[in-house]
Image (cartoon, rainbow, N blue to C red):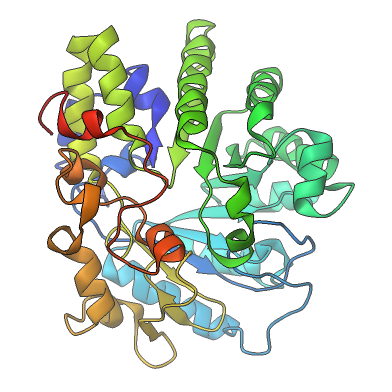
Length: 397
């Protein structure tokens, strides 16, 4: 997760993070991505059920409840363990989490135990009443997916009404005083609509937008032909930076982030090195704090059946199950080989990654994407768009 607005527009300084000692439990939400003490953010797929059928769904969500889903009491026990372990954020996802019959009770329990609660939703089920209820249970943030303007989004989500209902959900959250933002997964199908999405963000006064680079997992594995070329990615990241700066210059300090491609950090730094060298030094310090890809370190996932994964895209790799022992015990077990290797991955990486000067900042980027493309977990991430010159010159990381 790269905070474009925080880094490029200077809304966060390294001293802001250091003031809290880098401790996740003390950091305000807007600084959490720079925490130096990495208790994981946990994505909990509370249900497999979803009312849409999205092209890129990593969870293969279906319009049906899974018979093996954790019961409410099991879910509360999971949340208790996460809270005792020091997890700062639980991201309730799915499927569509609002189709879980006791989602409000679970969110309220997470908040009562002192964790931030975030909802990842398609937004179509957020009526004024649902928005008010989410606000009432002290939900920290709702991220609503919009993968393009109306025709594109509806095609992406498999329903002709998806865009209008998601937009209504955004407005209902705003009316209820609930912080809400957009989630946009980038493909060749929708890349030309990023400008239109920025226009929508400006018109609707939406506080936050996250642009997700495509990960080839779940149904997203069938979208390899929709992955951007390196040159297309560079142009799009530049556009995102430019539009973010324009919003801030217009007095609308929207929070803009890119997600799931950590070479965005060095790319932004190298741009700043040309434009604003003084700011570039501060950005480099923040990128070091961020630490790059955190799969198995600063992020983990629990599936609807209790299976634990290194992150939400690793559906094919289980490291334990909370029905057998607590998440905290699984996560701290040094004998869980995959977690151990992900946490000490640098010596295992080869190819361009092994000699890259930005390795300490990106941490080898997305391993699941490398594995999907090459069958080799430690090969270079094919979505890294930095040139050979950029990974070998331009300042030491």
